[in-house]
Image (cartoon, rainbow, N blue to C red):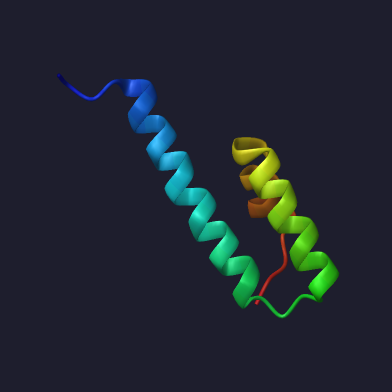
Length: 59
């Protein structure tokens, strides 16, 4: 009945994606850019998160 490693990693990715989406909402980027980042993060959870960390909107 232990937690599987895959389930734990999936939970961590979910938490990181939610954190990224919240940060996108709080950024000063335009509406179109926010929508594009959120769609990218939701469609490609791991890759979208990494791309957002490297090139996402700041501030």
